[in-house]
Image (cartoon, helix red, strand yellow):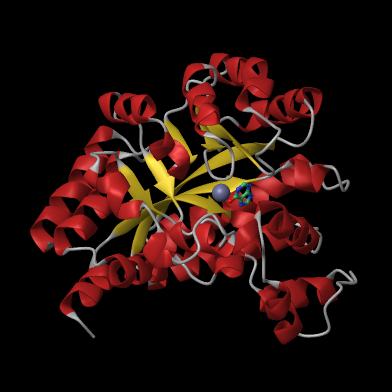
Length: 334
Ligand code: HPA
Ligand code: ZN
């Protein structure tokens, strides 16, 4: 194993773009389907893996929402989150910021409280037993209407102690951030930080809207920003981080091959670029696999890897003190 790959594995890392429902491995999907007596349209783990051949974001989302239907009880959400945190431990991830999609559960009659309590219980255990810190970000599904988002925000108000921010995910094209300006304003009044998926499949205009209307602290994906030089300048001037998910982008055909990915260009333009796994059970790997495959495909230098890892801590919602502590440690190791 090359020195740089050993280094990637060894260094403490943060992950800022991870959908907990997207960490549902086929084996756990089967186990939960059995436990909850839910029929899934797959006969075996191998059949599931064959179905994970996507041609765009929507073809993935259809299967992702289907998979999430096996999650019923608080224990299921605990098991799901705990499994992700154990994987994080293996990868030396010491801080995670986890997205969840409450509407994909409440729309099936699953209680909001049960979902958040299951996820939260697992992150408390991980803090104690694995030394991993976490934050939770609640995403609104942008293919649903504003009213449903407002209702979801209302349900989150009694869990402000557990949820640090709100985000926006699901089908992008045709569902601009502007649709959620009022909900995001209310969320900010309530003290939530904001992030949004933008410029994954959708145009760079959606990134502008996320910045101007939703006042986001980070852009999730954002890889299409390079189509607009003024936008690149704005992202750089305001030091707005991008949570890039390289393996996801290849699986969803945003880029044909990993070697065509613009990650290195984003870095070289001085943007606060980070690497993340998005939906690791569906896209072929967790954080280390994303970093290692990018290093090999794009010839990333030790300096690039160090920058990506430091950027993740810098861009996190950790306190300034904790950020400083981790960055000092990385500076000693790399
Ligand atoms: N994009 C939009 N919505 C999502 C994604 C994504 O990559 N993953 C899970 N929900
Ligand atoms: Zn995502």
